[in-house]
Image (cartoon, one colour):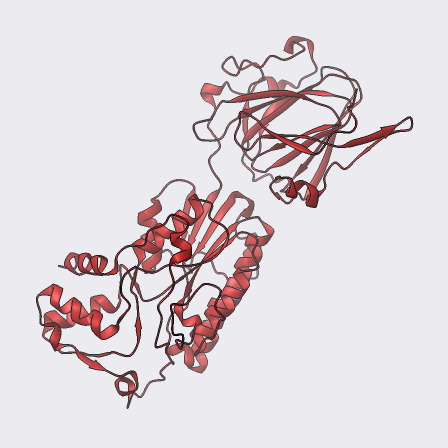
Length: 471
């Protein structure tokens, strides 16, 4: 008999993420009423806001009707409208709890949240049982399922009614034993901008595991009107947007302005829509150029945006869009150095060639090595840090471009005094090309990301190691 008057209460099970919920049911001589799904109340009580999109009902006439152990690539909220079931759940996800079993009975006063990859099955204990489940993806023939045999000896599920005495489909009886089951892998991670400096660092950080994908602009066009159908997006957990239009000076030209807005704003907007509609974590890389460089202290994450030029304006607009995605990290960085063409490589080359370069001395900030950005991105995701914006640069003193160039010369064994400090205005005087305004002060406050347990690399040590590795 259904129990009335329970409080809305979650109970963790032995399978991570599988949670039983007691539901308030109100009844009298006329029958009963319950709120089977109430987003505000249930998420406030701790249920993940899993975004159901479909509600299904399986009606079962007879006692002993048994449904097979199916693990699906979506989350489920399972309950009973009438009758009673014995439910069995087996963890079929890749990981240390693969094969773990949990069983319990459900009536209208109990429900269970079933995460993606956990095998779900039941046996009816009363006639006319209506089994109800909400899912956060529509059924698709392209979805990947994992199945387990109801009679698997390793799972040893104690079915109340023997399997040779129940209504069950031949297909469910033919599923493999646990030893022959291929575990369901985690949801995928997609790295965009895979051939850029940061993209290559992320590849080095994450490797080539089957659930990690890397894509260039040619392989995934964010401006495509068919982006929403370019992937089965519900199979993805994380998108890292390491792609951007970064030609700061060209962005000031009529043609460059169009390209900058297309890549850094319109493309990001499309990506944000994909992430929002498919419950994907969007990690987006930002820039110190969203500020005007007039601060008298290191910039904090919540300081007002005040970009000077087109590039900074497009990055600020992109940040504002990404901030609307429920699950997001904006990683704001500066003066990026990695594998590929960059300031440090250029200065090292000039030092070896005997060139005495003029280098601006009134723009100050910190270098950020792509290895550290990749580490920081992984840390934020793996540690489940609070969503939002995080500054991430190398640590240490804030220095000018000229100071950094002199250090590079010294590390190589050239004379750092050969670097000629030059004011920005004088450096660009007489240039025939369009020149973008640049923030003169770019130091970013690192206290927020450090509070999550992440330690940025020391800038001086990183620079010396990088230069020496250039040979």
